[in-house]
Image 1 (tube, helix red, strand yellow):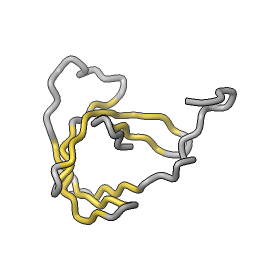
Image 2 (tube, one colour):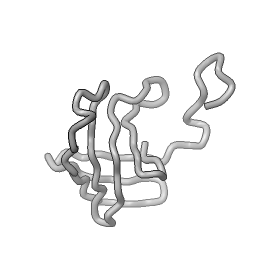
Image 3 (cartoon, helix red, strand yellow):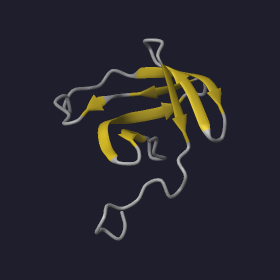
Length: 91
């Protein structure tokens, strides 16, 4: 999940919470990012900037390849994809 403020979180929708997070920046032909797995044992260290090479970009999908050559595909989530947990009225 890429957030407009430059942060991202790796999540598995619809029912699993974040398991990694970092910073990201769109460089046009690549997405530059840092990466830390929860519970962040390396939180106080500077993270190496990695890049996802953009292979295809549409309004609803971003097809990329990581530094190891593994494909990573991102989809735009519907606005109702993220819901508050049961018993909580809003985020």
